[in-house]
Length: 147
Image 1 (cartoon, rainbow, N blue to C red):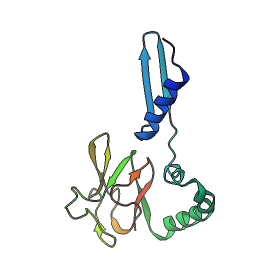
Image 2 (image 1 turned 90 degrees about the vertical axis):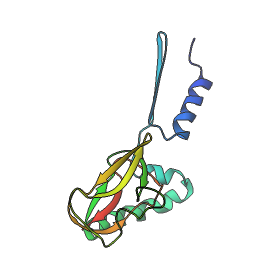
Image 3 (image 1 turned 45 degrees about the horizontal axis):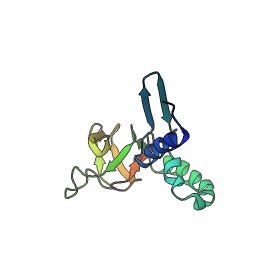
Image 4 (image 1 turned 135 degrees about the horizontal axis):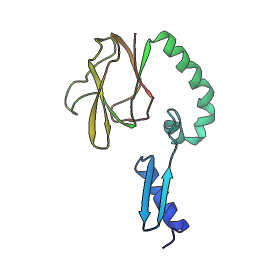
């Protein structure tokens, strides 16, 4: 059985619709692997292609300034969904202005139905939380700044 174009297009749609980065299938002697490159800033911008050109230049300058003015960035170690609290009715792990110690849990990133606690890599004060609760995040995306 050969993989036809329609079948490959359906697999690509499954890949995109489910926020997957790779699909691999084997059928006897044949195998197919579809991969999607993931870039830290590309995913949020792709959803709104028209404003992309307007936002691309202005966004890069403030981000560089934030890193200097806002403290050290705490980035996501994986692709997943950001949660600021352990459950929907619970208080957030941290708030802007709160002081944290190295190793304190500051948020959760859910990946493949697993809740991964993200710990502060260094001590300091939370100066900005860059993502909202339930927002998808990419590997390396800045979650918050700690001064």
